Image (tube, rainbow, N blue to C red; front, side):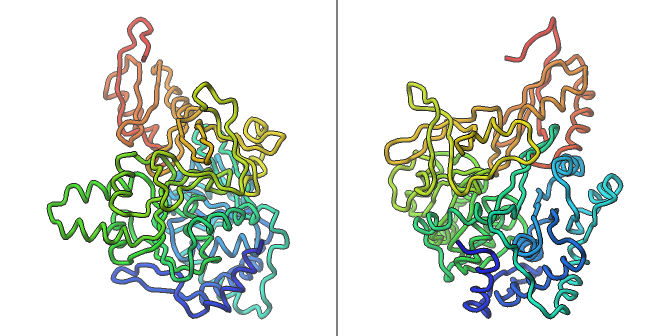
Length: 484
């Protein structure tokens, strides 16, 4: 297995002048070559080391960007450990992450300035670098250093730390090595052979292992070109323009595309969208359940839709549909390089999914209950329930623990939100659930609707967008009444 440095060195020689990363400048896509990108990675790594960041945990708090990708590769390949966090996180969320691990520096986009100012006050010993202002200068400083940057010496050491939800409890920090991250490449390539002729369109957050690995990291192996989405509202028109051949999709966006097709009275528009979709060689869809009727519709239209199932703790994919597989009811076929079993199946064969293999994290950092998820036999206990047939098809049935996986693939832990709501002693009961792709709550309290609304607004201020409680139903607390 090669390292990030070895892949980049190969890329520099094979595809140097080929376009690699394309971003929208407000009027058109502008491309940066493999050669320029890799030189920026190498020079940034030298600049970071000069700034004293070697062997440190370095956080990225930013929207997707060219700079995000350069920072990620520079840190993981040459400097230390990359800690990318969700762009929607509040300072409150980041504070919980910082209670789990030490971070030496935060690279943030200017749009996060107000949240970073709050962090500066609470964590003054951390260095803060505005990406738009500091990264180019750091690259130039590194370029003035004549020698090449030394690569990280061991592919088994932690290259990236990702986080679980962690809103009211300490977030669980998931360490992943380069060996973990690259482990599934051969199996994925055997199912979906991506090449330097492919075009990847990226709209999912790169801090998610799903997009960050399949949509980005694996491009340094395949050589495919990347187009970054300019705005989530522009996904469909940009895909029509870019004509990608590889896309990581989530059920919510797929459903919206389906609704656009169904709502259109223009047959040419429908045909155009479907033609674009059928031009995608590998349309992965993961992060949540795909509604069967939507999956069936696109497969029948000739779209190469491949449902994927995975977790952050397993460096993303555990199971993936096979091309031309007629079984659309399963949630993918388990990867051959992984040891996947169903633990304690019931009479219907349904039990917890356990995974063992080279892509599996060594276990949460600084977590006292590590053995609950990572057992002594090397299996990661996913908490997901499923049955598996003799051909390796997985059929997901839900969660062993109470967690909502939103339609865009985010994890929302119900217990955490309920605990946060119940900090108000006048709210006697709180049940958080999902309704029409939104987080909702059923509450028991004798407070007025207005009082509860004001309190819920304050609760939502602590939460990133994907966790915000969009609607609540209030029931009076009559003789200790219960929510059924």
